Length: 176
Image 1 (tube, one colour):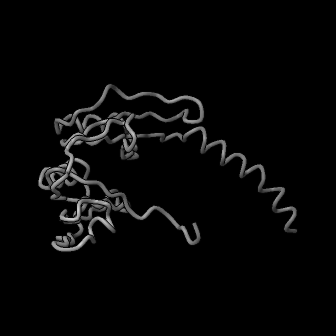
Image 2 (cartoon, rainbow, N blue to C red):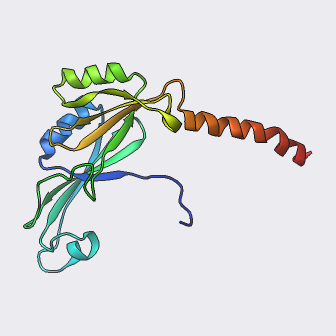
Image 3 (spheres, helix red, strand yellow):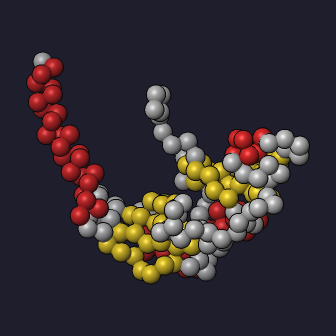
């Protein structure tokens, strides 16, 4: 992709914006930025042509900042053909949003203090993910989120860094 720099934002649709805003601000600590819309096209096909939704759908976009950098675009749709069931992680279109935390156990306790459903207990990863622990949890509307933590490093990244360090002297010698 020419000019690709970074991920700009992640967008998802919620069934109840008031509930979502409370969760995003009070539980995750997001900063509400602004809203845009409503967007609708009462006579044409702009919504279906540009967003692949029902032509009479309407939506308001709400933007949040997460962790000082990531942007979440939260859609509040009204559409005649709107489905309200979430895909399972194993379904095509299934998804989750992974959040890095410094202390996984403290973060899990925080979620539980807000009556957020945590799925199982933290799991210790192996293989290239050695050094990482993770756990999934559900938002109040059922969307899957994940907490990950690898404060001592994650094996894949440590191996990558070691390989860079081993190449560096040879690359410096070529430059001299």
